[in-house]
Image: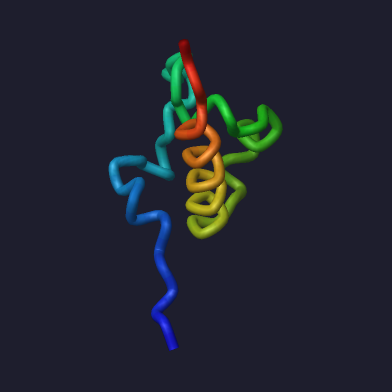
Length: 67
């Protein structure tokens, strides 16, 4: 059986406890893909939930296409 991949390890430079949403930049920033309601409740999420949100948001940010 294959060992599961920990996708969060790709984003180890992200501090899930202090994401500084207010410092998001326009282009390819994962913080732009976290819904406002989730940003407001960030402290209520578990570390695992935060990791999942970061991975999903990073995947969206990474797929941005700019001219």
